[in-house]
Amino acid sequence: MNHRLLVTGGAGFIGSNFVHHWCRTYPNDQVVVLDALTYAGNRCNLAALEGRENFRFVQGNICDRAVIDQILQTENIDTIAHFAAESHVDRSILGPSAFVQTNVVGTFTLLEAFRQHWEVTLKPDYYRFLHVSTDEVYGSLGPNDPPFTETTSYAPNSPYSASKAGSDHLVRSYYHTYRLPAIITNCSNNYGPYQFPEKLIPLMCINALIGKQLPVYGDGKNVRDWLYVGDHCTALDRVIHFGIPGETYNIGGNNEVENITLVQMLCLLMDELAPSLLVRPTSDLITFVKDRPGHDRRYAINATKMKTHLGWSPSVTIQEGLRLTVEWYLHHRDWWEPLLSDEYQAYYQKIYS
Ligand code: NAD
Ligand code: TYD
Image 1: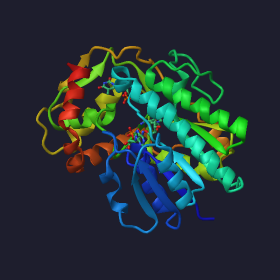
Image 2 (image 1 turned 180 degrees about the vertical axis):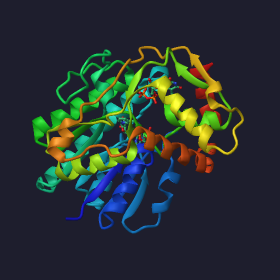
Image 3 (image 1 turned 180 degrees about the horizontal axis):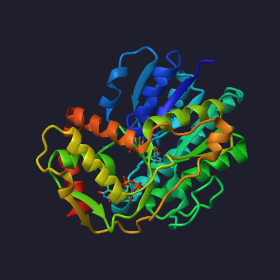
Image 4 (image 1 turned 45 degrees about the vertical axis):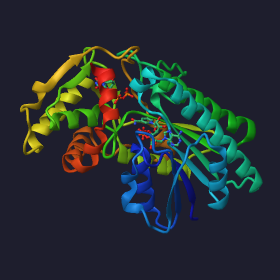
């Protein structure tokens, strides 16, 4: 059957990759993007889809019930893929308020609107609410702890992860209370095209290209489990089509790497692939800086359930994914240069000065 999707946050990093994946794979489905276009949202990410009959972009806020109701009814939406969020830990430390508003209140508003829409349309069994969340809700692992599973207790440590945890709990409660067909995914760190340059990998790529320091927090030994964004999109596709309402699925890259090792890998790729660099070798730019407050030491995902229940596992190795990503940032200067705005410079000063 053809689906009619509402993708919130579809102009952001993962959301836009997902929209491209969906429109390419299911050209007969209807896709509506709702995005507030905050600093992290960029309509250029969707430029290739503008004007197509099966695609529509709406600029609006997920806290605005009227705009959501209007889209759900007029577009006859059956599936929500909910990506919209404030997503950066460092910004949540500087100003947590927007995180509570968008991540908690926004998700609640969306759930209420979708519940009403689902009830009015007589609760079709193919409706889905996919809530895209993070592994950060589980807190921090010690060096020898087993990776997070779907039953690991929640222990969020930053305002970002606490607000995502709050939204997860709301989604869970809507399934248990109202049987709203909702599914939660908790994913590890993503990387790839269209990622805003506040996050580790694009920040390092762009700083290397403009000859700026590569700031590594603390001792650089924090560990993240990196997942190529294309693999995340295929995982979410499986979850929408075959996932069971009320279930949670952990999605990970099976790629645990210390930050300093990752940055060194990026430097080697830059040295190999960039024709002109202001500083070479790029690793000369690596600078250890003051640690992030409350910095979680290690995240790692056990994605066995995705493999055994939904037949998904990641296909891109970290070496392949980093090469693709470095090449993308090298060839898309026109995409990232405008993002280094006065607002970005002011943010950068606050975090790194
Ligand atoms: P992003 O910051 O790149 O994009 C977020 C998008 O949401 C932007 O387009 C922004 O304009 C939009 N948005 C923000 N507030 C909004 C509001 N109130 N109303 C409507 N739109 C709004 O984020 P991302 O990295 O693409 O993350 C997408 C989702 O995936 C988030 O929910 C995040 O928690 C989750 N996630 C991200 C990662 C990661 O590594 N990036 C890992 C796990 C989970
Ligand atoms: P980030 O991309 O912000 O994702 P998250 O905090 O959600 O995991 O950071 C990834 C890791 O890189 C994290 O351990 C913090 C670290 N980091 C740096 O060392 N320097 C930086 O400039 C940034 C942005 C992150």
